[in-house]
Length: 154
Image (tube, rainbow, N blue to C red):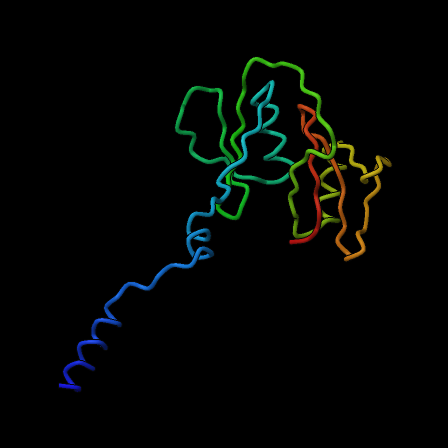
């Protein structure tokens, strides 16, 4: 009888679903980023900029309306470039997207070849910042004036 009760309890316990902790439930419900949408005045100039400056490959564009381009920006993320009637936007440097590059020196050479100005955080032209952790960074603007940080933390 004791043996049967032990078997019954053992089977019952191992067949029970474990209770989820609040942390486990929150982890399962966590959202993740899939894409960044960038509103632009001219889709061709903006797409050309991101392809030439960063080397982002174009993805298949499902809408086929001429107003969207999708780019692969790495890490299973995409950038959706969306052309719409342009309304001026105020763009602050604090609001920026950051991309890391594998070789900052080669990236800077490409900027110079493309005649794209860059600056450090305070705004000193053609200057890069080296953070206390050794990461180098600079800032550029895309054709619509959006700020982009570029660093060599790859």
